[in-house]
Structures are given as structure tokens and as C-alpha cells.
Image (cartoon, rainbow over all chains, first blue to last red; front, side):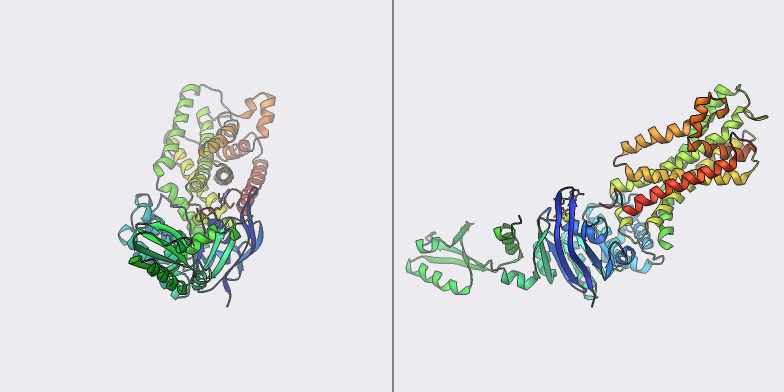
Length: 305
Length: 251
Ligand SMILES: Nc1ncnc2c1ncn2[C@@H]1O[C@H](COP(=O)(O)OP(=O)(O)OP(=O)(O)O)[C@@H](O)[C@H]1O
Ligand SMILES: [Mg+2]
């Protein structure tokens, strides 16, 4: 099986600033992959080098086995990109835009598929509206449609749900998930971590141009060992001194404790009983992607430089 | 080829949809030039035997309109899609840099010829301009608009802002056009200016174009043709090289 995207040792500089620092990444065909990281981490830059919108200063990139600059036509045929910036051509209607985009890929007779993506993206009643007259979220949908006109095996979405309402977000992800099931490789970036957690099977985290973590979603959350959060509402509202050192916070009347694993729950309860403190409410929070993300981004071990 | 034809179609549609500004307005403004010169300079000497000054002026003005509109088309299309960002849809596609170049040039040629033909047809209602060699007329019109289209591509890629594009137009395109003998025969100029005119490639386009109408010109049309072809080739290679390297388009 060929890998969908292979990024080898890619560096990209803007002047002296290093936007991508020896990035290695291999995404297999059929994966649903998330590229995460804070603003300015280099996600868009990486996507641009894959798409040929910018050129890597060193290293190599292949899409479905095609080198992105030496075999750019083959590589781009296999790639559908939804850019992060909202852009559109004000001269055309939605349908004209999609017809023209199909033509760029050498497809002259694409009416049936265009109708389908228009319907799936909730654009049916806007199909003959000029792009200028669409709302921001509608323009975003057209950009998603444009990336799909040539049914590319590899689809990269750079924050496709920014500025999109809840309803479309749901139907967009349903559609994308269907494409994934049908064999398309999906790569996305998003700042909504629950989206990534719900959809993706693997993630890479970028920070200051470096891949600082790369793992399957389950491994990510379980092995990053950020632990569990135990939230307690107590009467009286204070912890015995023994427990105060593991308290991590106090929010909305809840005392929060950090635990590494379930076996630590029992001693906590025993301490409370000993001190005659009553438990009014108790919650145990599972770690989620957001915890891992925050801990990775703050962890000095993953601080670059 | 579908990709190329689609981009060409898009470029044609782009100006056609706003034909009032892109075709009609330039036709009217060129006719205004003619009207003014007619009024002020009809008493001027004959340039070629039996050719009144107005009739001498018509081909020059037509060619000027052809060239300016070819330049405007490619340059404004390029800079608009660059600044609005929608050029990414072309850059993401498998279109080759040659597809992009030829689509932009051809659309510019079409617009240039439409405006030129419009101007000429209106003048034909009032003046009887001879057309000795239609083939020469066509060849120079196509080469001239192609060359200006290629210059438009270069200017549109190079300029980051509209005022830079305006500077390119005001300091390069307009002086070269006005000093190319649109309004006069260079034989009427002092020797220094004659010499400088010979360094201006636009002069050969206008002179060759005019030869097609009157069968007479300042310079041999064959030599003009060679010079124009050479300039066209050089400018096109530069434009293609800019597109190939991704200069200012792919970071
Ligand atoms: N054309 C450019 N010229 C100079 N610097 C740039 C350019 N493009 C990006 N950068 C810089 O490269 C870094 C990475 O930017 P990039 O857009 O890839 O971040 P990102 O991870 O996509 O962030 P976001 O989540 O905000 O979209 C940033 O510091 C940015 O300022
Ligand atoms: Mg980004």
C-alpha cells in the first residue's frame, strides 16, 4: 500500500525564521488524521508545502507516491485542499465556480457530482447565487466543495469548520466521514479538539515548526499520562492538610485533585472520612485531548530550543 | 487541454461579464482622442501621399487601444486574483505554468482585438481608411496584444499593490506607447528622437500595423515583424519563467 502523504525532513524558512523544522510525517492511505498545534505552529505552512503553494527549502514530499514539485500534476490531481483563508472569485456563481474548478482538473462533464456535493453541503438554494452575495459560512462550504470536485483520494482541510454553524459542522463531518469510509484519506486541522478527538484515528502535534508528538488517538490520551481529575464538593469546604498538596484547583465550589490512576481514589476517601468531612458531590473526569494538548504545550521537555 | 480551455473561458468570462467597463468604455475614450485630434489638427500636413492626418491617426489609435487593453486585461486579472487570494484555486490545480500563461495571453489578445475592432468599426462610419494588407494588420494586432498581455502578466505578478501596478503602467507602458509614433510619423522628429524611437519596440508594432493599412511605413514591415517577434519571445520567456519559478505566487 502506498502512503497517502510522505513528508521527509522538510524545512521551511521565511527569511531567518524557521517555520518548519525537519518535519517527518507519514500518513497512510485511508487514515483520518489530525494536525494540531497552537496558532503559528506551522500547520498551514506544512499544508502549503504539500499542496505546492509554497516550496520546501529542504526535504521531500510525496502525495500518493508523486513528488510534489517534480511530478506536480500527478500529485495535485490526487489532492484536494480547503485553504484556511476565506477566498472566492466574485465574478461567478456557486455552480459556475464549481464547473470552472472541475475544468482545471480536466473534467468537462461533472454536473452530477457537482449537484451531489452542492446538496450534501447544503448549498442547493444558493447554487445560482453570486459568490459575493454569500455569507462567510456559505463561502466556506463552497471552498469545501471546490476541494472535492475531482474526487481526490487525499483531502486536506485547514480549519474547515471555522465560522461554520453547528448544523453544517455536523453534516460536513458526516459527509467527510463517509468519504473516509469510501477510501479517501482525510487530513484536517482544527482548534476544536473535541472534533479531532471524535473523528480522527491519528494525530500529530506541531509546535514551533516541529512535530512534538505523533500517535494514535487512544495511545495519545492514555500514554500521555496527564492523569484524572477528581472534583469534590465538601462540607466543610476544606481539605485535610494531608491532601492539600495534591489539590490543583478550586472552581465553582468544587475542589479539584489530580490523580495518576484509580487506585489513588480510595486513600483520598479514607482521609476525608478520618477528618470527618462529608462529600456532597463527586465527579471523576477522564483525560481528554484538550488536557493532553495543554500539558504538551506547557511541558518544558517539549519546549523547543 | 480541458484545463487550459477552462482557464481561458474563465478569463474571457471575467471581462465579458463587465463588458461595459472593459470593452465599451475604452472604445469610447479612444474615439474621444480621435475627436480631439480631429478638431485641433486636421489642418496638419499629409504624412503619406494622399493620406489625411485623421486617416493616418486612426490605425495608430486603434493599435494603442489594442495594446492598452491587452495589458490591462492580463495585469488586472492577475493582481486581482492575487490580492483577493483566489489565485490559489489555479495554483492548487494541475494546470501547468504554460496553460496559465497562454490562457492569460489569449484572453488579453481577444479583449485587445475586440476593443480595437470596435474603435475601427466606428471610425469606418465616418472615414474611409484603406486596408492594403489585412494580413499584416492581423499579424501585428495579434503580436502587439500578445506582447502587451505578456507584459501584463509580468506586471501583475510583480506588483504587490494596485499602486505599484499603476506605476508600471504610468512609467513604462504609457510613455512607450505615446512615444511610439501613434500620433505622428517619426520622420517628422529631430534625429535624436528618431534614434530613441527606434529603440522602442512599441514603435515597430504601430509602424507595422500601419503598413497594413497604407502599404507605406517608416520602417520595413519585415524588419518590424522580426523585431516584434523577438521582443514577444523574450517577454514571454520572462513571464513563463516567473510562472514556472512561482515568483511571488508560491512562497
Ligand atoms: N508568508 C509568510 N511570510 C513570513 N512568515 C510567515 C509566512 N507564512 C507563515 N509565516 C509564519 O510561519 C509561522 C507558521 O505559520 P502557519 O500559518 O503555518 O501557522 P498555523 O499553525 O497554521 O497557525 P494557525 O493555527 O493560526 O492557522 C508563523 O509564525 C507565521 O507568522
Ligand atoms: Mg493555519
